[in-house]
Length: 407
Image: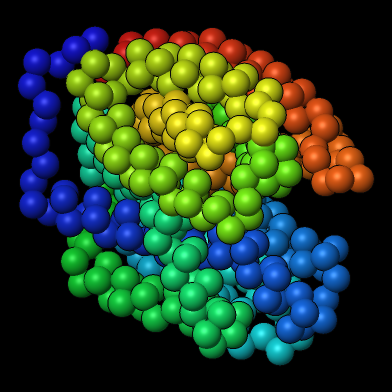
C-alpha cells in the first residue's frame, strides 16, 4: 500500500536514531573485529585454530543464551536504564578482552562480553518500536542497519591498523574509548522510556518468558526470524575463502571487494527503509527476496571471475539482502504488544544468534575443501539458502497480513 505523505521526524527522533545507529556500530564492530585479528592473535597468544574458533563462537552462544534469559525481565524496567546497564557490562567485557593475558581469560572475557552485548540489540529494537510508529519504522531500521556495513568498511580496517601498529589489544581499547563517549551521550540525550510500565507488572520473570514464548502469533514471528537468520548466515563464514580460492581474487584485493559492497549497503539501507515506508514493507521484501535468490544462484556457481564482476554480483546481493532484512524487521517489530515488547525482542535476538551459529555449522558440514584450497559443494549452500528464502517469503506474507489487520 502506498502512503500519500511520508511522516517527518522530530529533532529528538533524529537524535535517537543517530544514537542507536552509532551504538549498534560499536556492538557489531566488537563482534566482527575478532575474526580478522586471528592472524595476529594466534601467534601472539600461541593458541591453535580450534582454540581461536572457540573464542569467536563463545560470544555468539553466550549472547544467544543471555538474550533468552533476559527476556523475562526485559519489560519490567525503563528501557533507557536497561540499555545503559547492559552497555556498561558490554564495555567492561570488551576492556577485559583488551587486558586478557591468556587464552583462558580471553575466552572468559568474550563470554562476559556476549552476555551483555547479546541483549543490547533487542533493547534497541524495543526502543525503536516504542518511539516510532510503523509508518516511520522502515526508515529507522534502514539507518540502524547501516551499522553492519559501516563496521565492515570503516571499523574493521581502522581496527586492523591499530592492531598492526600497537598489537591485538588496541582495537578493543579503541572500542571501549568510543563506547564510553557513546554511553555518556545516551545518558545525557536519551529520555526515559517507560510507557510500557503503565500496563502493569508482568508477574514473575519465568511466567512472562513462558507467556511470550507460547503466544501463537509470536511463535510464527520467531520461526520466521530463525529461518531468515539461517539462510543469511550460511554463506558468510566461507565467502572470503570462496572469493579467493574459487573466484581467483587475490587476497590483497579482498578489502576492495568488501569496501565497495559495504558502501553500497550503507547507501541502500536508508533508501530501502524509505521505500518500505512509502510503498509497503511486504512488496519491498518480495523484491529483495527475488533479487537475493537470483544473485545467490549466480554467485555460488561462479568460477574464476574478473574482480569487476565479483564486485557487481556481491553488491547486488547485498542490496537484495538489505531489501529483505529492513522491511522484515519493521514488520516483525509490529507483532508484540507494548507490555511484552522487550521480552519478544530479546527472544527474537537470541534466536538470530543461535540460528546464525547453527547455519554456520550446517554450512561446515556441506562444504569440503580440495587439496588446492578450492571449496566444493558451495552451490549446494546456495540451493539451501534459496529454499529458505522461498519459505520465509510465505511466512512473511502471513505476518504482513496480521500486521495490517492489527494496525
